[in-house]
Image (cartoon, one colour):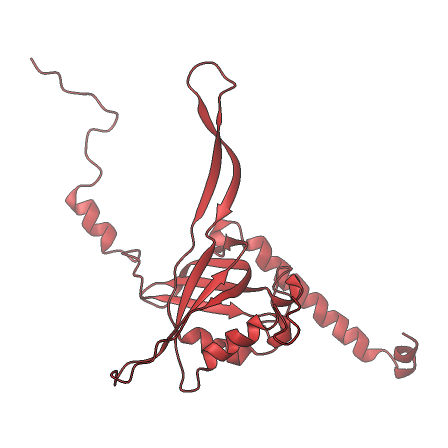
Length: 240
């Protein structure tokens, strides 16, 4: 006589009604064609914000230019992360794996639809010239050429649902651009390979609310400092 297995929950989870209600909800599916990319360049060529991208904020200058370039991003890959392990054999019985470090994807590729003057390629060429001097071949300082890249996944209402920020990023590779006289109605695409150190999640539900409060605090402090300095007499400003 067959014995019926006993489980804590008798009914299956994935019954038809549960599946349909889940997929018809606001969650639904994530689609790869709904995304947004924001690029924050180094300060020397105009970054994408107000503070230093290397130290955690953003930089001033070139905001409109970077927004136009970001809007032309046609394809990007969400980078992965790998936890490296080593075998712990200093125990009785079966061995086990223990974590010894963490590594991130070496490079990601961003594909841009080019404008008529290849402004996108020009920008990244200019960015790379902060890494080396084409006349003397001297190398630049690390902090002078690293920036940041933000990647957001959007829902059907164009709301951000997930995001990653790539820290200490820079365009490592400007891939070759193929030209062909036989093509009539195609757009030139520029592939840029970005290297970065690590990434962090931008979703506030994943512990990033502290970062938001820090930005708000910095804004308030900067405003107060500007108001104080504005009201200091000119004679005192000269002494300071």
